[in-house]
Amino acid sequence: MNVLGRLLLFTLAPLLGLAVTVYGFTAEPEELFFPTATVNATVASIGSQLDNIYENMGLMADEAALLEEESKAQKSVLEELAAAVSSQKVLSDNIYEERILAMLGPPVKTHQSKRVEIKIFQLDELGYRGHIAKVKLHDPSALKVVLGQDTPGKKETTLDAVKRTGAIFGVNGGGFFSEPRNGESYAVHMGNVIINGKLIAPFNPYPENLFFAGINNKGKFLGGIFYEEEHLMNLHPWQGVSFVPVLIKGGVARPIDAEWVETKHPRTIIGEYANGDLIFIVVDGRQSDWSAGVTLERLLEKLVELGVKEGYNLDGGGSSTFVYKGEILNRPSDGKARPVVTNFIIMP
Amino acid sequence: MEETSRTTSRKRSRNNLAGALVIFVVWCGLVFGGFYIAKNYIDQTILKVQQTNALNIQAIENRLNDIQNGLQNLEDFVGVTGESISSRDSIQEEMMQKIAEFDRQIQELKNSLNILKEAPR
Image (cartoon, rainbow over all chains, first blue to last red; front, side, top):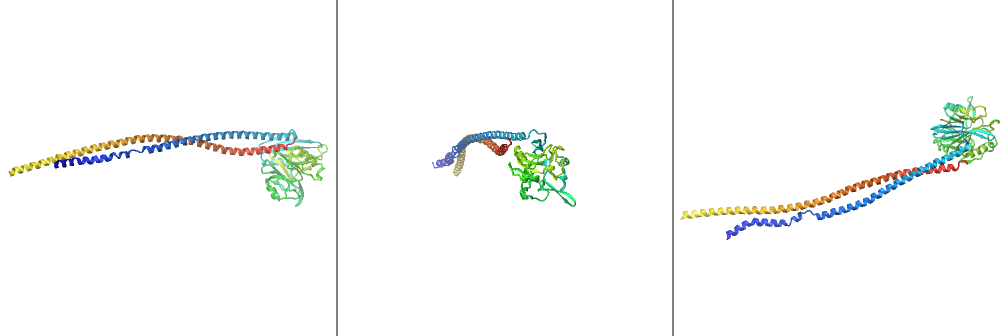
C-alpha cells in the first residue's frame, strides 16, 4: 500500500503541477484581450468631433464663399461706379472746353502733339484786334522761357527765338530796360526770370508790384507777387518772367492803377483757365487803321468774359509779338518785331 | 540454500529495477501528456485571444480609416475654404486700392465740376 501510495504520488505530482498552472492561466487570458471598449469609445468620440468640425467647416466654407461672392459683386459695382465717375469727369471737362471754345470762336490754326495742344484764335473786338493761343501742356518741358540769344544782356526778336530753338509758337516775355555797360548797351530784365527752375540772376523783389508768372515743374500755371525768394522757390517754378500788373488772381479781377486804366496800347497777356489750360493773348495797337490797342481795364473785362482765372500783363507796346510756325501772325506796332530780353516759346 | 537465497535476492532486485523503470517511463509519459494537454490548451487560448484582438483591431483600423478619410476631406475642405478666404482677402485688397482710386476720381470729378461752375456762359 505504501508502495502504491508513493507510486501514485510520484505519478500524479507533475499532473497536479500542470493542473495548477493551467488553472492559474485560465484567469489571465481575459487580460490579454485588446481593450476595445475604451479604444472604440475614444475613436467614436474622435469621429463625432470630426463630424462636428466638418459641419462647422462646411458652414465656414459657405460663409467664406458667400463673402467672396459679395466681395466680387462689390468690386464689380465699384468698377461700374468708377467708370461712371470717369465718364462724368470727361463729360464735365468737355463741357468746360466747349464753353471756352464757344467764347473764343473757331480756331484758325491748331497744333496737336504728344507734348502740347495749341489752338490759335483771332481776336476781333471793337477798336482792337489780336490773337489768342489756348495751350494745353501735356509735357511741361514743351514750354520754355529763353533769353535773347540765350545770353544775359542780349536781345532777340520773338520770331528769331522761335526759329533758333525750333519752337512752334512764341510770344514776347517780361519787361526789360537797357543800360550801358562797358560802352555797350546791356539789356536787363525786370524782376525775376526763371529758366529750367533756376533764377538767372539773384532774386529781385523790386519794385514791389512786379509779379512773377510762368509754370511750375508740373506744367501748372504759377503767378503772383513774391517778396521773398523762399516763397517763390517753394512753389517749384520752372519757367517764368516778371512784369506788371496782375490783372486777375484766383478768378478775382484786381484793381488797376489809374495810369493804365485809360491808355490804349498793344498788349501781351499770359493767363490760365480754371482747367489748367494756358492762354496767351497779343493785342495789336497804335495802328488806327488796324487796331488802336486796348486799355488794361477793357482787356481785364475781356479776360473775365473769356472765363480766364489767372491773368498777368506781360511786356506790351512794340514788344508785343505773336509767332506761330515761323510766322508773325500779329502786326507789331513798330512795323517789325522788336528784339526783347525774354520770350515764351513752345516746342512742337 | 545460500545459493538459492542469493538467486532469489538477485531476482528481486532485478524486478525492482524493472518496476522502477516502468514507473519512470509511465511517469515520463504522464508528464509529457500533461504538458501536451496544457500547452495545447494555452496555445488554443492565446490563438483565440489573438484572433479576437485581430478582429477588434481590424474594426478599429476601419474606423480609423474612416477618420483618416474624414480628415482628408476636412483638409480639402479647409484648403478650399482657405482659398476662398485668401481670394476674398486678395479681392478686398484690390478693392481697397480701387476705393482709393475711386476716391481720387471722385475728387477729380469734384474739381472738374467746380471748374465747370466757373466756365464762361
